[in-house]
Length: 106
Image (cartoon, rainbow, N blue to C red; front, side, top):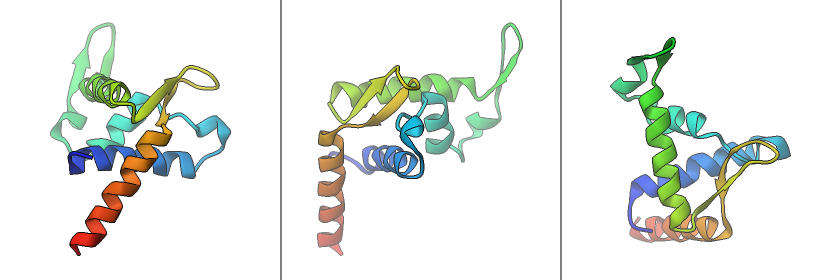
């Protein structure tokens, strides 16, 4: 695993899955963005179009970030039972490796 940001993203997905049922196995990009960047000033920005939407830029950023993790094989996108992202076995292994390395550092 290359960085702390990736580990944080994987931990968010792991926590979401552990706290839910089969129906919550996949986390929507919008919810991921709200959790990943909850302290960002962008959470307060409003985007206008055919109505006002709060923090839509973060939703788009979250989808892009998750897609990059998907290309690395760390997460997978599912449409059924609910559209969203979840950890792959490779993602779980990399997260465990990151935690072991962190413990070894003290």
